[in-house]
Structures are given as structure tokens and as C-alpha cells.
Image (cartoon, rainbow, N blue to C red; front, top):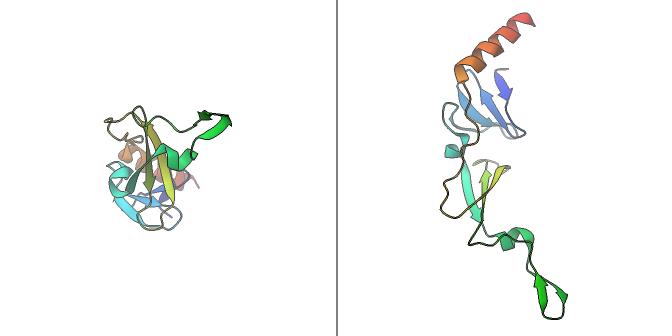
Length: 118
């Protein structure tokens, strides 16, 4: 097996140097790029996630949803099976964060060393 677990839902296939979903095995994009480039990305309104405002007293409502003028919710999904890989809360206009950048050469070197010792 040449796959290394990176997060709960992401593996890297070191032989192919590809990001993979560890739920369905789908390959997204080169491991030398951000996995997000190969995923489905959806911007969801906060009201979808947190529900409508709740009336706490007559004429007074409380909402737990972030203000859409201040925050947006970005969801990242496997393009094959649809498992949610990542969620980001970002200010409007802010680019999506590429949260993982690995040294693939060092990762391969470490993996080969561990395999030789096993």
C-alpha cells in the first residue's frame, strides 16, 4: 500500500503522487497542488447551516448564523462520493485557503525509510 493518511478524509498515493479520498479511493489532483483544486466547492449561506432566527421574546429574534456581509461558509467535497472534506469560514472576497502544502519528496523519502525498517 502506497497511500499515506493526511487527514480524516484525505490520503496521498505516493506512487502516483495524487490526492485521494480515503472513503471511495477517487483521485483528485496532483499531490504537488492543493487538493481543493480537484474537489467540488460550494458556498453555503449561514442560514442554511444555522437555521432561521429564533424568537426569544416577543419581537426579539436571535440568529446564530454569521452575518453574510462579514462571513461566508465554504464547503469542500470529494467529487466522486460527496464526502465533506473541509469547511472554511472566510470574509467576503477572501480567496479560499489552501490549508495543506506538503513536501512530497520528503514524505516519499520518509515512507520508503519506514517501509525498509518494517
